[in-house]
Amino acid sequence: MNIITFDSDEKLNEAAANIIVGQVQTIPRAVLGLATGGTPVGIYKQIVRDYERGMVSFRNVTTFNLDEYVNIPVDHPESYHSYMKSHLFDHIDLPESQRFIPNGNASNLDDECRRYDEAIELSGQIDLQLLGLGHNGHIGFNEPSHALIKGTHTVDLAEQTLEANARFFASIDEVPKQALTMGVGTILKAKKILLVVKGADKADIIKQALQGPITTDVPASLLQTHPNLIVLLDTAAAGKLA
Ligand code: F6R
Image (cartoon, rainbow, N blue to C red; front, side, top):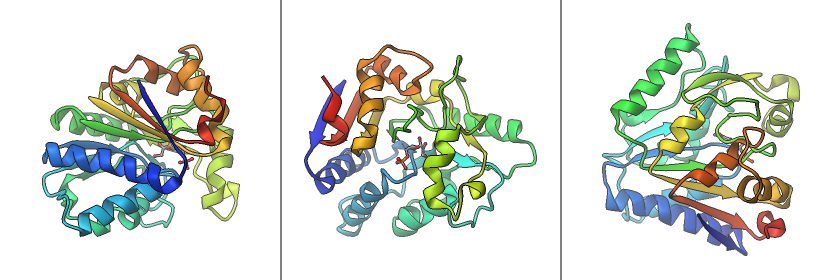
């Protein structure tokens, strides 16, 4: 595990973007696993900047997003489909047919999850998976539980997740209660994982995830078992690490 701490958000975003852009420069047909939420916004901005400078092309890249809410219209401003378009996809040359996000409006969610796993399998392995970290230790939307699920599945979002995501909606009642998420098995199969964590409010959970026991109660703690994990932190998030 490689942990790097940054004293500014800008440097952290640049470093994360460099790793992602570097991956695509090295393997133009790279398969990227992508995240949403507050954490990657500045990283995507930097990637778009690099793209506009002609440093990288996404023409041959394939992307798989970690998750999407269930029963939110695709064009709702807070759907992860909309998020990815506005923060990244609308600004780079990644063909639409090579972008995958689970369909939370599918008539049969189990079939949709199977279809998503098959698409990931077909693409070969995910070369680089970008992850944020939930306050309760979730990765993707794999919430703390007595058991974790390997593949893509429907999940009831934890109360803490609904509260955290309420900031993106008019009220907590509007936050969708369920999501489709890639499973922990798929996440851990990625060749390389880039975990990015920002803010003092995540200092306790990142300590538990990286330095606590490996337990399904803190899904991110399973990342300790990954052979190629890079962790980028700001000084606030790193504040409690030993
Ligand atoms: C998003 C995702 C989540 C977030 C996590 C942190 O696709 O899978 O695990 O990464 O909830 O969210 P932020 O970055 O908003 O604190």
